[in-house]
Length: 491
Image 1 (tube, rainbow, N blue to C red):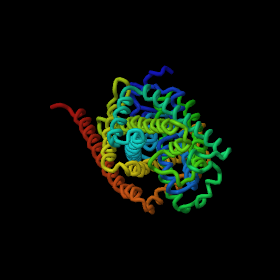
Image 2 (tube, rainbow, N blue to C red; image 1 turned 135 degrees about the vertical axis):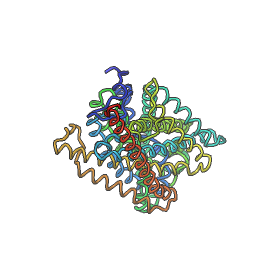
Image 3 (spheres, rainbow, N blue to C red; image 1 turned 135 degrees about the horizontal axis):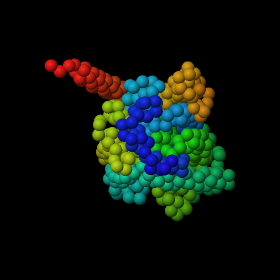
Image 4 (cartoon, one colour; image 1 turned 90 degrees about the vertical axis):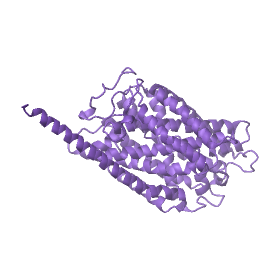
């Protein structure tokens, strides 16, 4: 298929006669780009920055949190893979929620995913500002955040092809950096090398010699789950990109299956090595733990080089946030469930209305960096986690419904299937509910703030859906009256 071929002409329905809001997109993303978007989605500031603060709070036992969340993330991705092959659309799980649960679920899941990326974007531009602070300590954090937002906004508005190419190279840089770290870290541990002038040696014993494997207790490891879930966010990006992917039935399964080893090696392996190279007490949330390691090695420029890499990771994730929310908002707007402006598409096949809508909210993140620079990242992460958990639960439940419909003979189930369904679905759902419950018992005011916002978001969604439904009924009534009037004879 030619890379610039349009899906359909505007206004035509998607599969099954359903208007998906997928009209007008170009099939501009290639296999090379989608594979790297999927890899890049599994490597973000949740690992590059967030792991430092979580290691400081939980100790080496944090690796257990990454392993548990990684298992849940794998099943979420397999559920998404089956749904995507059932019907690949740019609206992704918003359309699946609408199809398998109901219109209200599409509305709620779409807006919660938008909340996720709105807050994630704020976290990413905050992380970018924190990284730049290492080089320019006198530049206010909010100014750097504003510049980062401006650059990425321009890139997203230009073309999908440019987004895909930039994201490809961002992902290449991130993957190479992680691979280099894994090889260097493994070599340091195997040789028990001394780490610069720190007076410590890289060794497996660092896992237990500094007050044990669980120095702060197992409950703290459990409480870290919410932040770890955020670290895995964006892996579902491959589902959003499906509607603009050439040959998704061939490309998507490869991308989804790759999540398993990426999670095992990149996340769990990296955190494990971090705790063996340096004592967990040497990490903090003020800089990337990878920068901490390379700076401690004493190699000239190594810390700065790694800082540049993690900066690209932050820009990459924010770039993805603008991309995905633009598509989700357009899908919602096609049903009258988002402001009409967000449905606007440029001549370059870019949903610029939705992208600009999200960028306006990102400006709030710039203000947050001005107001509370030290807490801006954690506030955004905790609120974003609500959207991530909601999205993952939606995907798992939709796959259960797909399986039920296939069992009744109503639809044909794709050959690429969720393993162990429906039992793995229920297990993963239970795990995600546990993550929400643990946030309620946390003594961290930023997690408590997120939980306090949950009922507020629920009320807003209920009111919003009632307003949308009322407007829809009024429009249907007006259409019916017009049809009756048209049939009445003229005196």
